[in-house]
Length: 216
Image 1: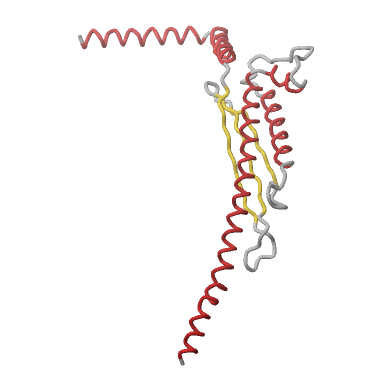
Image 2 (image 1 turned 45 degrees about the vertical axis):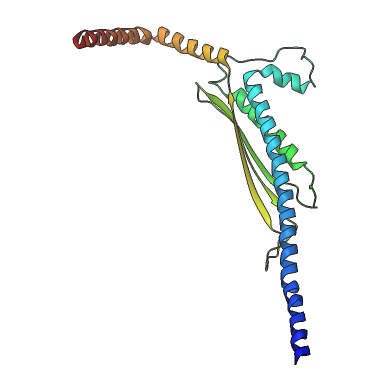
């Protein structure tokens, strides 16, 4: 009887091991896979951040784009810079499209990392110059997928993780802002609206003076 109880006690650790060990190994491999996916996400975001900054720089100074295209050397001719290009954003749109193509190409060319098949796929990029007149920005929205080399129970395809990234950096160009303000002033003077504004301003000043005298 004692020998039978001892045999049953010896079987308990074996049963526990058959249950715990597979779960433990599954969790360990899942952590390794997710760690590699997170590393891939960091690499993608580094590319997006770097090229978003480049896009903002190109919007401020088109000469930088020409220098980058000529591998750091000064171009033979100065690029055509259109006046009030922050209001007529065709040039900015071309810059944004170029940045989108660069990001898509660099992200799609990333290697697998630690495991085969874990390179980013289904990459979509939307780079835009956001013109708010006073405070403009350059943004990059990036969507892609990372496939894990594992399947969920009952699934036919490998498990895929959808990932999204968003970067937005300011575009600061004080000279262009001054030119835009001067353009508006020229338009107001040419249409005669500036006189109306000055007259309205003088009336406001009179009302403020009268209110101050009444209070005093």
